[in-house]
Amino acid sequence: MVVLCCSALIINVDNTILNVALPTLVRKLHATSSELQWIVDSYALVFGGLLLVSGSLADRLGRKRFFLIGMTVFACGSTGAAFSGSVDMLIAWRAVMGAGAAMTIPASLSIINDVFRDQAERARAIGAWAATIGLGIAIGPIAGGLLLARFWWGSVFLVNVPIAIAALAGATVLLPDSKNPAADRPDPLGAALSIAGLGLVLWAIIEGPTAGWSSASVVGAGAAGTAILATFVAWEAHSSHPMLSLGLFRNRNFSIAAASELFGIFGLMGALFLQTQFLQFDLDYSPLQAGLRILPAAAMICLSAPLSPLIARRVGVKLTVTVGLAAIAAGLWQISAASTATATYSDVVTGLVLIGLGAGLLLPTATNSVIGAVPQGDSGIGSAVNTTALQVGGALGVAVIGSAMLTRYQNHIAKALTGRHIPTAATHAITSSLGGALAVADRAGGTTGALLARTARAAFMSGVQLSLLLGALVALAGAVLALTRLPARTDQRSQPNLAQPLPTTADHNRGS
Image 1: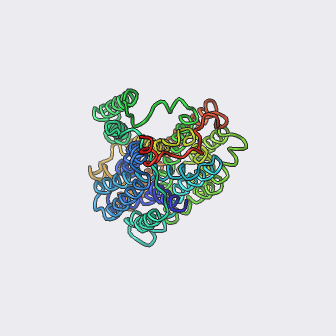
Image 2 (image 1 turned 180 degrees about the vertical axis):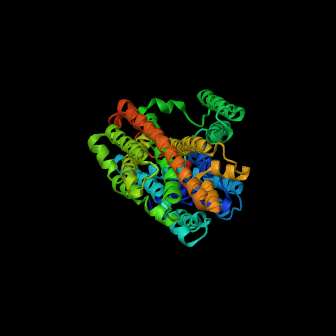
Image 3 (image 1 turned 90 degrees about the vertical axis):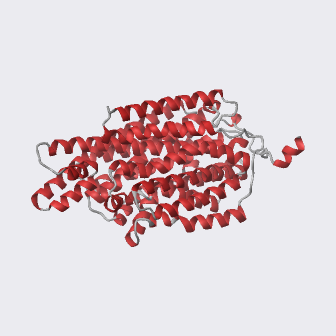
């Protein structure tokens, strides 16, 4: 459990450790807002896109083997990201890291599912594992702030390497191996369709504010992505060896719980993406100071996540998940309402606490519901679907919430710049991001610079207000879905016999 939780921690820390470094990347690599979204989402896109096929391969070829390979790829990608000299190179190495993470996470959760056969023990183990994921998401900004206070921005990636090496050593010695020789063969076409479809949809969402929502490239990419995702569903429905068995979604413990995770993480990741920029650009906190001010969310996850399995057993899965999503929605709404041009940290801390509380209740409970709904031999696929919901939800949250903010920001800035003669390069910097606008304001200085900085900050906060309200509505929709469609408790009669051993290669040969 220690080895597996450490690997889950470092992989999920990487979902958010970069957020606190985003303003630094604006200054050092001159990244625009859309490029910041791609730096975050390239990791989540490849992570989520490869999870299903990785889970299937882990079941078939050996979970321990896939865990070791995945951690190695993740360490190599982290090293490349640390020493990237451009935005494009950083995006590419982040994608490599996502591939390594996609191989590691399904294998680790499958190993937990194999080791802990008793239902109650498995629920506690999955609760600890899911709590580690939530903790990793929450403490990422703090860890990033500590590193940036002493080292260069690449240290937020390089720190992964020694932890990955320790996890590899521990896994080699301690982890048991298991496989399901009867698992279906891989589905590379399904994997390619899912990555291509989701990638095009995300591209359209992220590039919409810059290229124009009605531009041919954005509309074409969005339409093509939607068509490819529809083709993916049709292929999976008729394939003899689908990457994702659509029949699993008939079980509401599986499908509604996974959807609830997606809705919840949508708001959580979108909020973290914006709040670290608000704390540094708008309130002038250092990366470390900004990371420490995310601590209330991390603390609430640490407090509520270990208690969520106990709460779920007492009041039921339905109510626990619903309350978790409602708390996230309330936190996002509170921050949205407080996001004015004069907002301070104390104005948003209540929202951070509510978001952390909601995530701590939601993630372990929904994860246990998803994993418990699949047959024991298909635990790799179950864990892959669970993590895919988290990664796709996070990627969409950053893309949609970030783009909604940028669209509102650019509209306000464009009105403020109308009739003013500003060099093209400066105009591009001002409209591309708040960081770019503040850099121009700093160079301009005097009354003009102060006016530009004040206008840009007000436009950014207006964008934050709109986009987090959108996130709150998504989380609220998830709460309504969970309340109306999620079973009150896991139906033990529909569960696989967890005491029955997994098929092994030896058993398979003996049966032959």
